[in-house]
Length: 306
Image (tube, rainbow, N blue to C red; front, top):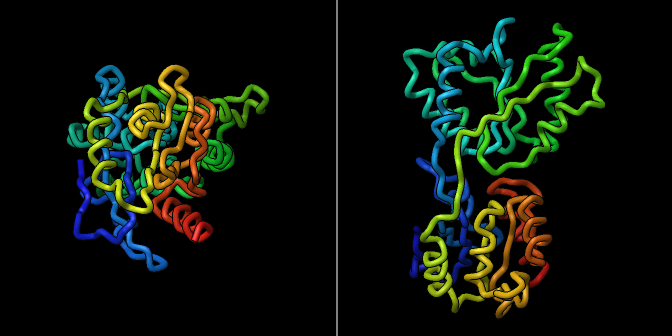
């Protein structure tokens, strides 16, 4: 867990409820710059604990070793989908472990779809002799990506009456908007795309999160503004409990404290989860799920309040 730099007492703390990415983290880089005369102090408070799941990992490994992902007619999959950095990390691990047994050129002949620039950047870092064909980074969310794929994937395999299946590497918790959209029975058969989801990692709340979050809140309690950035529904209840915003009996919102803590969500999924599950309305929902989108949302809110 990061701690607050006490030398930057005039800055605005931004408490990022996520694990810091390595070797570089785009959120740290974005919030380490002064914008509109405001200096932020980015601090990471890890919420999620991830573990790779052997069953799913072994299946993907066999697909890679047997060249089951590629453009040739007997390939099982004609492309892949990634919507989380953890899924990319799982894939990267398998690629690294099997680099002597994998025909990388097969992966370079198919489209690979991502949602958001962070996932796209993580995939690009895997490229070896030939770069991967990565698409969809600007879509912003799963629904937009699904509609983009219907057209793009259809064009990629326009010579085939039935499109090859897509392999979607996912975690235990995920939305089903992409498979539902691509496999919608209302679509003509020549447009429908089979999506096979394969769970390669699991997620839970880190045991130390609540205590770590309390420490950071105590260190920053005298500051006028504190922003809490929420990236996932997982951990929301623990966050609200530490903030003291929940009625312990009903598990619904009861107060917003002293008004010095503001909440911004990475996107509408997490916003709606806070709203519908706990009756908590975030102050801001980022227009784009990116470091720039979060900072823009915070700055716009603060300018309206000043």
